[in-house]
Image 1 (spheres, helix red, strand yellow):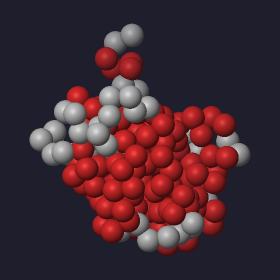
Image 2: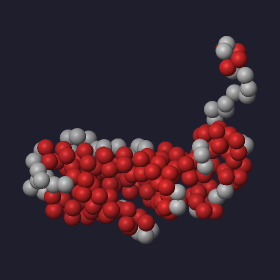
Image 3: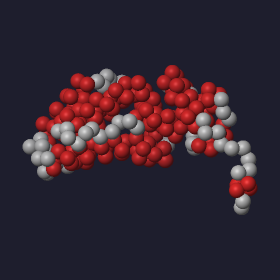
Image 4: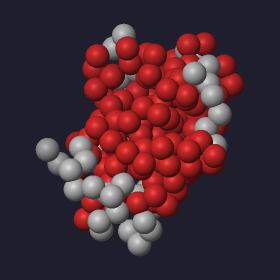
Length: 192
């Protein structure tokens, strides 16, 4: 096939994806996930349904991408921080982001309960990358002698994340004080 043959058809509009994600994010924040339709998203973005479906299998995946863009900046803190300071920084950064996005994230979690395939994608793209960051901080703490060598890193990650998922799901405030308290309580159980 020549280059001319492969380029037949309408070229893909590169601005459509960002426009769809912006529209999805704005609408979900304004109305809530359940009250946002594909039709409303494509109308707000100024594109057709097929444009959306060429990029995402459905609303849940589009909304997940839209909100992942805003939380992708959550990174592992500097390696020179001690384990307590690193965990606090991680959770403070995460909480800042979740203050605005928590209602949408709760909606995505609820949607994932009825869609096993989407649950896998949510876990792989949202939950697991953050768990890996926390595990790395804990492992650094073990190597530095700040934490006991016999801790179960996976269980400690689950405790730390469970302690923020639970209040987030209940709509409680996630702030700097919550981050500090969460880290202090867990570190008491695993510190040397």
